[in-house]
Image 1 (cartoon, rainbow, N blue to C red):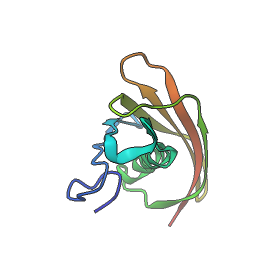
Image 2 (cartoon, helix red, strand yellow; image 1 turned 135 degrees about the vertical axis):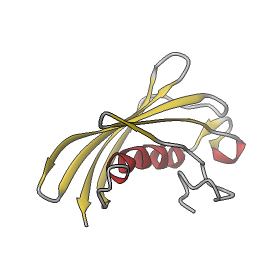
Image 3 (spheres, rainbow, N blue to C red; image 1 turned 90 degrees about the vertical axis):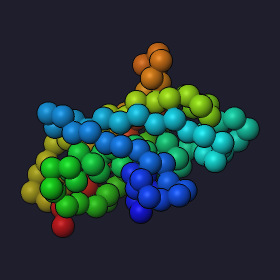
Image 4 (cartoon, rainbow, N blue to C red; image 1 turned 60 degrees about the vertical axis):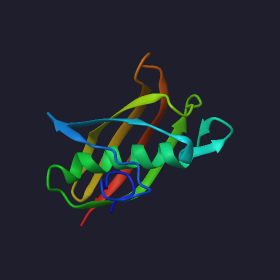
Length: 123
């Protein structure tokens, strides 16, 4: 029932994540339920997608951790119906703290929509 990746969640984003060589990728296209203002996707939806692509870098490697802090920078608006590619990777790790980075880019032009850096604490 995960909001971002749960395939059975009727109001979720239903994003499918793939791990390859330490990086997680996915694609997502927002619909009319994800609007923040007029035809623009709500920033919280973009944040949820980025947080989950980073979290899945750990989860898909059987590392249990929770987001401790996340900073996101929105670079340009995302319109409903525009497909984005998500990428997440580990930037560094120290004991129980992982620093991850994530990006959301337009699928058709590779323009950066938003990027994030987050700290995850291992449990």
